[in-house]
Length: 350
Image (cartoon, rainbow, N blue to C red; front, side, top):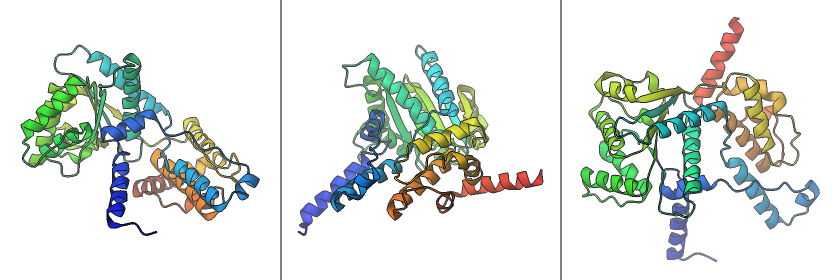
């Protein structure tokens, strides 16, 4: 049966709405993140799997594909350190009238910065919900990302978009900011997460205006601000007059590639435990933990990408297992490849 044009359009719009609802920088998407991912699918016996009707097997495999496609969150030492530092700042800022302290998570791409700050936000929100179990009009956490080549209006609009506030073409900056501040104050927002901070450059007029807008929000809102971005500590964002104001109020936590140690081995083992593959031999990945470290340069994001990608290929191709060869077949990001290459050259020179 062919969908009529209105029905097809409605289906596309529904899919677009569902996709938007998965984004962390919308209140709907954030709430879904707080509620947590669905439980991992049960792995059927091989005989039961092979005897499934085609339609049932397709749905079963689709559930497994969806499971492996999700980014696994692991409580690494870096995540725990960020959570403790962030929690401490929230408590210290609780009775502050001005000059509230904040946190900057800075480091190379793929080292878990977004995971760390979103887990901080999740723990803060869950604690707030536990303290106010029957209150539904609170928004304890706001999460926004700084758009590329951002302007002050764009960053203010990102706040409004998270809160679901309409922004019209004729709305001026003051209108947007006042609406955001009003809603955040009424809903008791206590933590503001600002990701992709590296998209701000204080050497440009627009970048300076974005920094000023964020500072203004931090002065108007009784909340703790947490920033995350690529190599912020080495950027222009902490230099000059404006940069000095940020540096004087924000603690910097550096994120780095993981060294090859017991924690890295634990990461690999934890990820292997989440696999839902019929022919994968337990212990295969843990026996490859050194190779995985060299292959990914110790980048947790690249490690997750490689393992999840290989798991998806295992289901799609019917091999149902991950091998060293299948891991090598997953293209990694340039940063991971460069870091791994440098590590190999360093080891060869020793």
